[in-house]
Amino acid sequence: MIASTQTLTVAPEDAGTRLDRVLTARLGELSRTRLKALILDGAVTANGRPVDDPGYKVKAGDVLTVAVPPPEPAEPEGEHIPLSILHEDDQVIVIDKPAGLVVHPAAGHQTGTLVNALIAHCGDSLSGIGGVMRPGIVHRLDKDTSGVMVVAKTDKAHQSLSAQFADHGRTGDLERGYLAFVWGVPDRPRGTIDAPIDRHPHARDKMAVRKGGREAITHWEVRERYAGADGKPVASLIECRLETGRTHQIRVHLAHIGHPILGDATYGTGFRTKAKLLPQGAQEALAVLGRQALHAYLLVFQHPVLGNIQQFRSELPRALARLRSSLSDG
Image 1 (cartoon, rainbow, N blue to C red):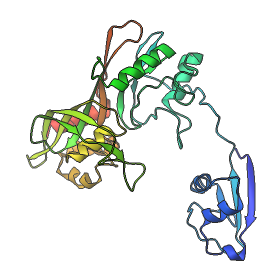
Image 2: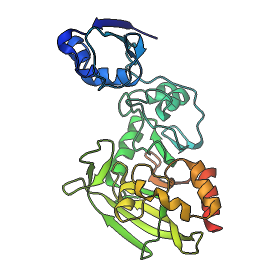
Image 3: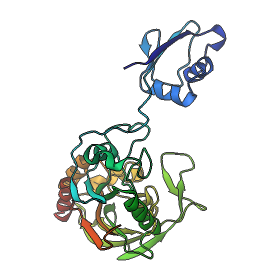
Image 4: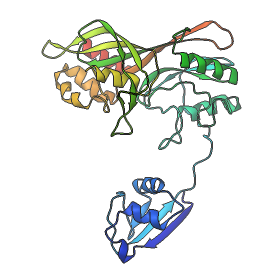
């Protein structure tokens, strides 16, 4: 659906200028960021042909057309997306999130999120709790990380759970346990990574260990060790417990100590060639997985109203269970 179409002809003095710069100068009502997104989405044509490169150098006389879609709804709408519900009562709902499901709407993911599914499932009970775009959300998992999550259904529950997650279990009962299949085997059975995390200095979609960043602490323990096709140690299964909750924390920390997660295309790029060291079955399982091998298997919290301790576990999804089995057979 198109809300409006704007057309302009490139003046001689603009010849050789980047497409996004010309459009920004001529279409003042749209920001350069918005125009760049429209170009990448294929909404801009030059002489009738789509141009998806913001750096395209325009020519004098080029006829540029911008198809502007209608604005996104101010609030997310309910969508009937299947949910795996581990527990639900009047205060909370506990979900076993599959890999590939984004938690809340954001740029590039306005629909098809967990929030859209929850709105459809819970109806008006989520309205306004914790903010319009993230109703009920007190913590999140990366899109490609699977596992257990809790969502608040009332203001009281949201306040209590938010406080528990902010405390990170230091004085309360909150626990978050993750299973990560990583490259290599650490030289000791357990340890703690205490390294601050901040935005990567050059790649804004990544995080990195950086001096002056926010405090980040991960406790880890080796659960299983796996041999490669040559009989030498090649990978291991590590359990992680979080003492803080930074973006991509486990992925960044494990990569920082030299043991990035299998299948992590963001933080484990230098280890891709190691896949050939895995047993054949594990190579195939990793290729099929298509994501980082990280799963949130445990969540413990105090019920916001009843006050009792709630514990929920999520079994490894089928693709990770296959990877584990094939690694063990090596």
